[in-house]
Length: 226
Image (cartoon, one colour):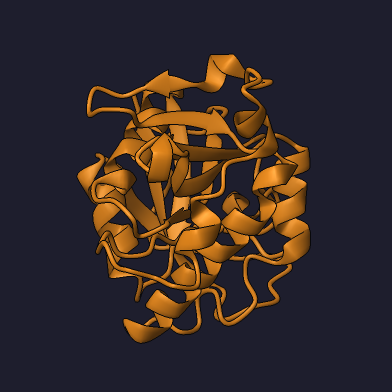
């Protein structure tokens, strides 16, 4: 989950899967985008897929989702701090310009369902899939990447805390579509480490964030190859 652009400063985090009432975020997360309210088709229907477990599906985020995404990230920062990991995202990451850049570049995906009041859409989780070479991943110590082939990087993964099993669904979506996926997380982010390893990612070594602005720069590198 990067701090300038996702291509420059990769970093991953996932909040715990505990389902909790949250008076700050839930009203925002229950608000569908304007496109969904109007009944219009998504601009990217190819990125939608209904899962076997009910009404859950993925769609690409748009500008109307910005406030809801920010609320999810605020919850993730709070949970990381409460669970012994206050420095990975600090109090401001992901930076506003990073979130907006992800939306503009169509990197941000949402896991949603229609289990809200009156079958209203709920956002369950958010993540970014970033294509292209990542400068931070150019140097790795205490190990090596599984290969040097083109890859996508998985960043800014966070649960909204309104349903269980969302991290598994997100990782399954990414590994179903890409043959070569890299990611990273903080040594104190045990939740994300578990998510990576449960999805079959291999711990490869240590990377250091470039153009780093928030928290500590050292990260555990993960890699998944089909």
